Image: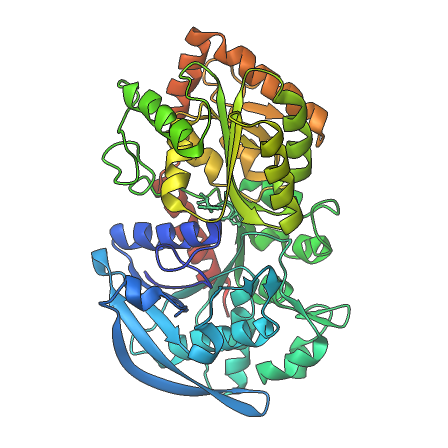
Length: 483
Ligand code: ADP
Ligand code: GLC
């Protein structure tokens, strides 16, 4: 199948969160299984210096944005298995210090930046020699692509390709002033309550839901949740209307990147049957983060965007109670300044026992996954979540709130004592999380059971082949439903 994947971020070129990991890994997996895949994303600052073999694709184009024209060029890079990555080179939009924001303030022209990117995706699928069988777009930044595709019918393109739209997070909708609809140069009929309009605003995510031939989200449970008022973020009605085209597919993990063996980002390798390396990584982590070096103390970790979604408030509450017990905690994250301060203040109260690194670091993320005994993920909601799956592979027991993809990917003792690999709690409260941490401490005191959890965790398999089959089925549905 010829598949065009478009996303505002793709690992290893650009990343703010799991979206980049998922799209990068999906592209790789599709190409490795013999499909013909083209990827397209914006050319942000720093990409060319990191990947100097990116070359010009000798293609310049001008696209209208309301009554002005914006110019861009195309660059490309050949990757393994015939995978081709394209980059939209438009310095005025993408050559900036951040991807979506700087100093926690969103770029004021984000609507234009991603309307333009969506237009580029449609332009490429129409004018490239290579014609995609399906265009697969992700999150609000490319949510307008299915609609712009249909618009092309008015502009003389009789057979635009079918589209698949994946919702990675319903909470980010790309909601902008209604007047910005003009920048789409599209028929007004799309700006209706059953289309891109949302209470007078332009809603890019809603447009994706309304106009894509097939819609997916990143776990089966989240697919059910978002059709309810509680999790629907105002879009549950639209989602229910399109329910027969909505599919929940759990993300896969790129086990080439997230491996405990021969991983250049890990000081010590290990595997299910040779766990000494994990213990050595724990000591490295304690040393690096200024924690008391002690192989026997249970060490918990979290790596996260510090946003409300991630359950920061209940985590701070539970930790301030639980750190009086014999345990350590390490955080890697960045986000809301108040939350950053919350963690830093707490770490000051518990020196040697809690450590915080505010910032972004892939090597430290791997070391935390490898060095910790438990991984905390108390999300308010979680479409899929990748870190709990990385933790499982690294033999680090996830302690998660049973929501969305966290519930779908972790097995707890109540569900199945034989294959349990994590600890789940249900109520969204600091008390419930503290109770789950206490369960983790008790598990740590029972080496036989703890070892069994670890083995089950490391053997849990979220490789892409299973996930791929489901996407390919959805692409077929999009193709047959398309008219
Ligand atoms: P989300 O996409 O909602 O942020 P996920 O669990 O799906 O959550 O994915 C988050 C990804 O971003 C993981 O690969 C995680 O390791 C990474 N990540 C988040 N914050 C940081 C950070 N500060 N440093 C390094 N990696 C981070
Ligand atoms: C989003 C979600 C996260 C998911 C990721 C990749 O950022 O918040 O749960 O794992 O997308 O699909």
